Image (cartoon, rainbow, N blue to C red; front, side):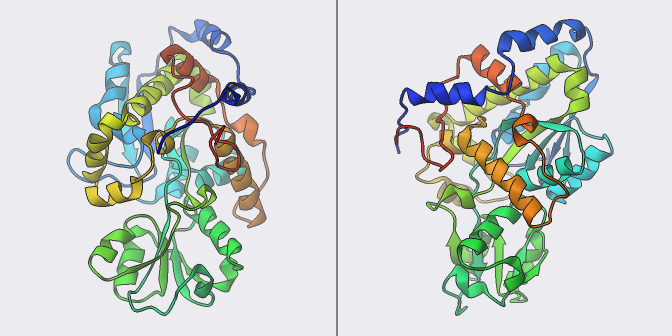
Length: 366
């Protein structure tokens, strides 16, 4: 697939930066606190890690972790970098953030929205792990043929994660709500086991379901791959307001390093290495290859909060409130802090490297 850009992207980039200060203004705020550097930066990841050393997958941040790029970036300042991984996914990260145990977090949209609506002071600083596909698996001999056939069935969903809202959107598009299903809250290990033993009729999950498909234990009823991106999962990196206010220079260095990692990981010449690095976390290389097949890396490994992603987060925030998953509405535009990303893109001369998407999910000029 060839990415086609047109002059409209310049206007879009201006829109992206509309709510942030320019790079010069941002750097001027560093002056007062330049001598203040954190002793440690604590990064939370809303997924478990596997192996020795611990490894996770699916984003440019995982590549930076595998290569030690954050540790390298902060070594001159004498700042230690610590990583924390959460089997309980986004909700567990929220608990750690609430207890002031993290400074940055890689997390999905819904759990962050729930926490922000509850008053947790965070700012989103860049996107990572966007447009991740969802899959629905059923037993191979299941009579179910479509999403609409899930009515009245026992269906698992890892609630409170970034799987939750795309699943509800998909159900709604097929004339269903969560109340039309016997919905069970199961994590990844739980739904894979329940599918294998036929204790559920279907599971809404990630590419982990492909493992059971390869064993002949599951048939794929639906995948968001090659479908509308509104049914995909979105993730980001956030920073606590306490940390970014106290350490703006360290925050900028973190974002710049993350953008550099995204640039490296989205280079097509690195596709094989990226997918094989992710495979070390447990999901087979063949499944990563299948999931990413036909998509430029710059689509999925893209740090920009472009008009598409901002609209996704606004919709997700409204949906979360409508479905009573969050307590209140809030200003998403103010929550997404573009200043650090814009400064990093300017500094690295990457303003035009990644594609910019319209709210409807189509690339500008397509």
